Structure formats: C-alpha cells, structure tokens
Length: 126
Image (cartoon, rainbow, N blue to C red):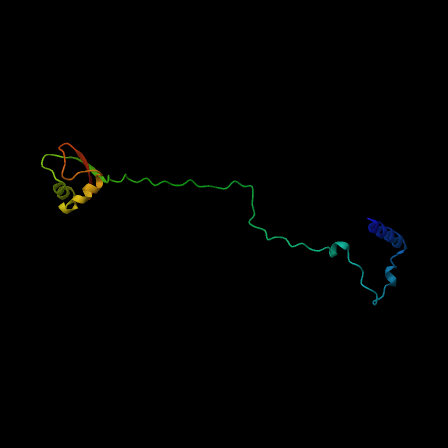
C-alpha cells in the first residue's frame, strides 16, 4: 500500500511540470507523437463464431406414413381330422411331405405321433 501511495505522489508532482511543446517547435529529429492509450491495449483474440442462432421457429415436416396392405398370415390354423399325419399335411399344404418338421417347429409341444381329432395346429405358409 505504501508503494502505491508513493508512486501516486510522485506522479502528481511530476505531471504539473510537464508541458507539451507547441507543434511548430517539433523537428524531424524529434520522436514521433505518442499514440493514444487505446492503441497500446493488448488485443484479445476472439473465438471463432459458430453457426448463428436465431429465434425463428424451425419449420418441421410431418413424417409420411406409407400404408401397405396387411401381410398375409404366416400360418394357417388347421383342425386335425381322422387319418391325418404331419407327413400328409406337409405334402398337402407345403408341397413336400419331407417338410413335416416345419409344422412341428410352428407348434411347440406338439407330439407328432399323438395327433388328436379336432386338435388345432398351425401350418406355416409356403
């Protein structure tokens, strides 16, 4: 604090004695005139500006929904009749009797050797 007071006192004593010489007495050998204090201030680099944000309401478009025909069912429901076997049903509905395992896969818990008349099963579509 004492240093600041002393410095302030010294400046106050020196300043009144300093007078600017008239402009006509300056010669080419003299120092150039002082620049304003603002020009000596350090410049602070500014960050690059990002995209401009405005208060406008953004325009939105409603999503379009395509309406398609419903997909055909993946299975048909069949009621077991007297004499049906998975082998015969695969041949009749799937076009190949060897595809009877696909009927078993579509019906968890189905016992191929214990089909009951009136039992409903799913048969996959071709």
